[in-house]
Length: 233
Ligand code: SF4
Image 1 (tube, rainbow, N blue to C red):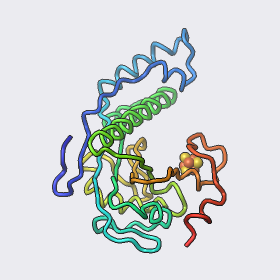
Image 2: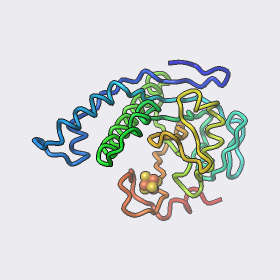
Image 3: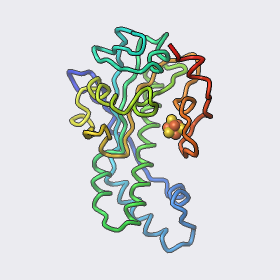
Image 4: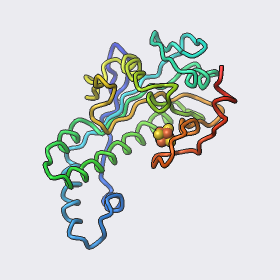
């Protein structure tokens, strides 16, 4: 773990990544015995030598709370939902997690559309590995109790533009772990996630406030009255 002075963010960049071939086959619907298995195994082995998934995080303290905003170490975040969720919190963990530039560059080099699709699935798997590594690290180092997470762009209340203050809070994520923010606030590499993890006494998932139907990533059912009950000001 390295510190990126002077922002006091921390980097995890020695995260072991061994692609899970059976899980990849299932994800890509490649049956055992198929002629594609050996080729996928070759790509996975290549990816294992290249990949350097990473995470950048910062333990940051809340300085002020307004009606629909919080100020964390001089950086203002505007979201009523975030503000209410941080009601009893004094500190948060801001983070960016990525599959890493190395794997992203490797994946970009494929011309073949099928190989690109497979490489994307491997990148996704590397990202999941890094997410688990950071979760474990924070739990081990900070003895966290119940926590929840929010990501800019997951709700209309906390739009994607709020990536900018999150990146500011974390210092220089591009220099630290190679994650850049585009003018439209998307992250490069695309297999990167960002957010704020905070202590909470009640479980919370942004999906509870998201009415989107048929979302494959849904983690909790939509609660159509939750916003009115808990977050309306
Ligand atoms: S339901 Fe899907 S789009 Fe909505 S917050 Fe959850 S994961 Fe995101």
